[in-house]
Image (tube, rainbow, N blue to C red):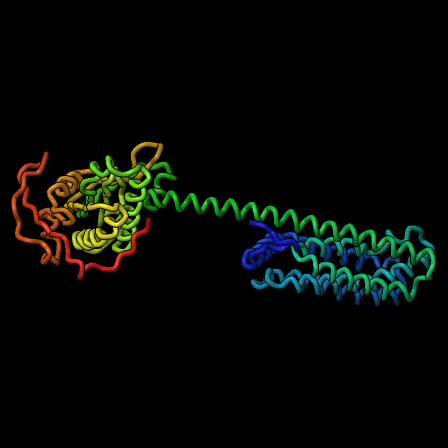
Length: 427
């Protein structure tokens, strides 16, 4: 995240977020300062009758009362939900306070001179403390702070010039004010730059955290992630899921004819297309095994009828055969096997973790795939019984599957081109 040359973030939305965050974090300090300033004003209110002439005491009481009221209103405004979006509140309140302090100090100066007290400046309210707080409260908005200083300087001149002789006293008064103003500008700039740097770092860390979170959630179900973070075992049982196993026909022979880069492009096209189909149908991708794609419906990702969802997903994947052949530059095909039943899912190990599925249902889907026609689907009897739309499948027939034995299988051949949806493959 980069800041523009004038200090603001290049992205306006980021700038707004920074301003709101910074002002929210400064809220406690604004309130503490307001309370401390009210305590100081009350202390002057108590001390004035002891040392100041009664007439001036009355004038000071009015000015200090207004100062207390303004400071209290300022503190109260910070509890308004829209405060962080209104820096003009700080601008107006602090300008009003410093205006009142200027008039209070003129009266106190006259009283101290009449009393022939030395160190007159010690007896007045230090207006530099208000300038320092304005530098903090208006950090992040240097133009607004410079405008505040310009108006404060105008107030300063308006109150000092009529009563100050135009000699050494005025010279030193101006020198004192300007040197303090330069320091306040430096403080405002330093707070702004450090705050922006910290905010940019926090934003970058949050972006990385979000990317890592997305990467983890891409590999593991959200519920599994929460359990892993809590140190719990991740093991789930699903009574009725449909496992889909898709394999590329003739891939082994193809590896001997084309370059490795071409093979990677072909597999990338196939898997990306299958991922898009899975997202459309609410099917969960489990993993890829060589040139095979394993997915499941009705497990950690909720769905309706898992058999219908699995069959619809399989038809969607097969609809991209022509594009797959174009990428391969030769005749290739897919076979799909689907079986429905109970599965067990979970995460095993502590490195390269992935949410996997086990059970006879997974093995059966892999065996069914080998019996499917090229660019067709083979489903088990349990899937056929669960499915509502069986028209695409022919009559049952018995096949001998490796490691399973004689099994009742239903086949669906490749669909005609005019019934296929328009599929866009991503290479």
